[in-house]
Length: 289
Image (tube, rainbow, N blue to C red; front, top):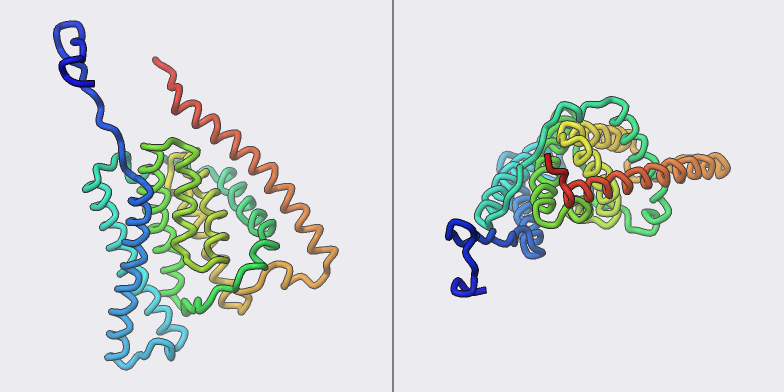
């Protein structure tokens, strides 16, 4: 509609048209992924050169040295990537908060349920994961620096990025359900290797749900840290590449666990979808006070 055809409101003023929100589009999601993955490549190359010059040749590091390499590579890639994505969003005119930190996110009952849900969903997805190629070189090292990276730095920075910045940006434009699905997919793709992508996508769905129902990144950070802590223990015990079916020789016991996990996943999944629909309806039809 041209300015000549618009009718003035009472008082003679023309209505102000709100600008159409265009961020994030598909291209923006790929751009943000590119920023994060590109930073990882740059940090890896720089540290590889630096460690080699210092006499610590990557690929021949002991577990403690590998832990230091992992910590430096992660922080030097993810922190600049997160700050760059914030700048990119601002440049593109994106809106919404960068994350929420409500205290109610520390509800222990809710956190326990979500943790059990994550474990059950992981078991249910094992038949699919078994068809995918096993992850390649995932040597994070051992020791304090490896633990701090996997159990502290990764949960904090990845939740700030995926559940905070990306999910909130998507929710501002597309609403609750699309933000939940797309931010989880974003989180999954960051892990690159097919088995890790699928596993991270499933975990991302649960973390995204917990974030949206609590308005708290504290909750998703805690759950993320618990998941990574278990993965670290499995890795250091030599079972990082094993599925539950590989660890339990008794097939009757395995299928009993699987059926129980499937029941937990179905009931929990139905609860998640019902709650998300309520959040969507509330967002689209706010109650006027």
